[in-house]
Length: 487
Image 1 (tube, helix red, strand yellow):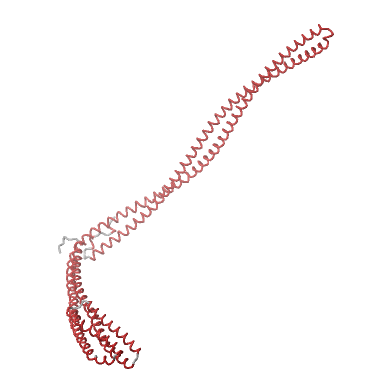
Image 2 (cartoon, one colour; image 1 turned 135 degrees about the vertical axis):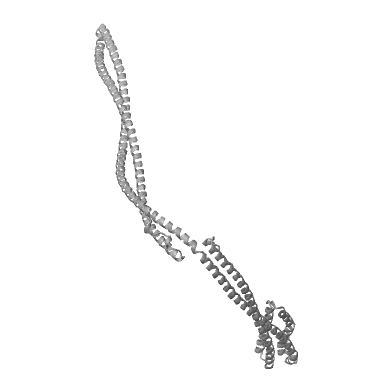
């Protein structure tokens, strides 16, 4: 076998050769087995046909017995026996017809089918005669006995025809048995010789392949040994790096835990600040609402003070009018008194009335002046009250504006605190996620370090396996280095 072929190609050639031999042997054996199976199937069919023929031969004897039984029943005038023999005759006729029909339908030799065709005519004649003789034996026994010679002749002809068919069955059975035996012997010889030849060829090819495999394996073993040594060095380096990474990851995880704890405290403080800002926001909002309500009340009070001042001015005008009326009344009273004095005694009563009217007018004037003074004083005080309420309203308006500004600032502070709280919570979640990742990295680094240790152990095991493989294939185990030599 050429040495430039690899192991897979050599094993493939061996397997392909084995497959060709197996397929060829299987085809030959299959052909012989199919031939043997066909012979056996023919033997089975012939055996079934012989059984059907024997049943037909037995039934044709049974029909003659039915005729004798019918004659005996007629002599004894036994109606029950007559009915039984009629039923038996019908069954025997049906059975023999079925047996002949089954053989005619089977796959048999042309000679047997020709013999079965020759049986058809004497069979029909015999069956009709048997059925007629059984019926005639009860009705006319003497006539039945006279026709026995003719019936016996028909029985002999059918028996002769059935005998020829039976001889053909026996002859065909002998031939098929011989052919089956030959096919079976051929099948066994083919299997034996083919298996032996295939085994010898496969053994020779296997020896040839086995002789050509060790050298490539020795080369591969040397390369694998070098790779195993390199794996040992790399595994040790990976072990050291993984251990360093695991230590760093552990320190980083501890630092992240401290940062996470500090950040949680900061989040808690920010949350309290946010809650306080939210309370301040509510208080500022309530103060703004109260200030706006006070401003509205002050506006109503300003409007009322303005109405009072306007009413004072109107009352002053009315008092002035009353004062003028009193002055005119006083003048009229003086004129009335003058006219009463001129009238003398006739105007004495009128003078008294005029004096009373004058006195009333004077008191009205005095009351009007006093009321006017008081109303003027009330008007001045109302004006002062309006001015004061204006100043108070102006100050309250400034307070409302400042309260609104404070409310807006508190709202901004509350919103900023809420956003700061949300941001810190997100940062805290991120730190927690980073902590989980760091913990996972630490665990992974430890697993990597463990895997590197296992890799070192497996590399040593691989090195030992290379030596063992070298010894198995007949190579030199010194082609590989010792793990202790690799540093």
